[in-house]
Image 1 (cartoon, rainbow over the protein chains, first blue to last red):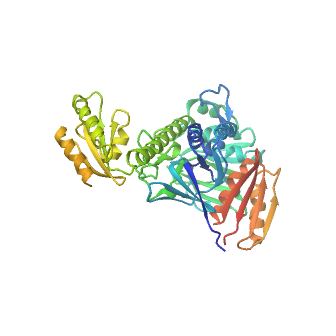
Image 2 (spheres, chains in turn yellow, brown; image 1 turned 120 degrees about the vertical axis):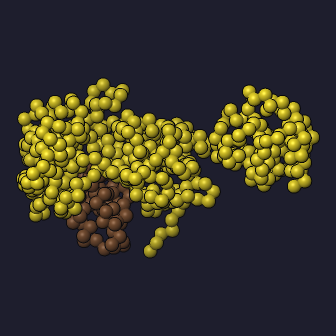
Image 3 (cartoon, rainbow over the protein chains, first blue to last red; image 1 turned 90 degrees about the vertical axis):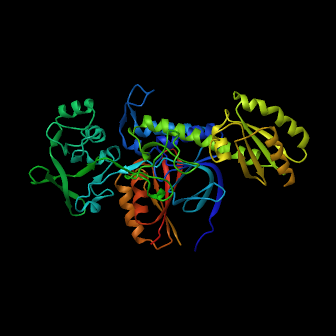
Length: 418
Length: 75
């Protein structure tokens, strides 16, 4: 029995409730945009997988990832952002420029979408991996599962910040924390502080030049077979659990064919977090970028939200003001510092007096909004001033060469005749 | 289409997921299981597992740090 899906209208939909999405929410909410944020599981994203965050500015003592994210969430809620804890099934473009965000029960019609879906942990691809996911021995979250491994032995795979820092955290619970590192002896990818602590920690033991070959066990994982990358030798390691910290993959399957992704699946944006589709933005780890941190996600989120706000304001100004009205329109696209633009201004005023019953004349200042002019003219006019003829809410003609008093008269009379 | 509730309050990982998996096996297609959890770790693995199995999932925050996970058995 299929339930009739209802459709709700919002200004902005934010997909993903990590630091980027939450910051975008704070900015959208504060801009008084009607905002809905979708999170498929726990608000806070990958930051909640981190025990301690000590490089997020403004907090001089280490913060629990989950607690820092609770503050982000509370702040977004204070500005009126609505939260929906469900997964987005699809995003579609509507004919009028709006976007449709589909979930299990409800469709949301929105003016702008901010994609902040982040990443998911990478798997090793070793044999039998699927059999031990979901609490059967393979984990990606030390803060979630550390207590379970109290007094037990675990293996970490990876040597970056997450691997070493979360490994150190696990030493507070586990009896032994072994670390499988792909590099030569002594080489870790993690930051120096973490490296020093790890090498000094008696519970940590490194197994160099190794990758995972196979997972073995009955109901739960019992053994991880490592392979030495130099000798090919197989090394079975008895464990109670394994933690994979070998990087992340972008959560962008949903957006394939909708927006441009790079060859690794990350969303390509410009400096304003704009994707190649108008009104769709991306922020945080899901973007093609050089540094994926809470601190950089926050900046992305703020930029994306302001860009979305401007886009909505301009789209509405264009539709409700510049392109609306029951009379034909002549828009004078000008720049106050341009001499020629100023010279023709009296002609515009005169035409307005004579023809105001039949044609609406309006001035559009390029200096105030380049993007409105670009949308209006299809591109930035190579020459100023330019005029745009609008009939029935649609741009009929853009003229930017040979404009003089006679040409302007001719254009206005043409519109009157229409 | 019946609705069942599963009380996992106070239970840490992996217990909520194991209980959910066991209960879901007993349900008919179209039935809904509401899993009550108050450990954030369960908010990560229970919905993810259920979606991977193809079920429809929605979550409601009941209070701070307490959630109802709605799982509609899809197959």
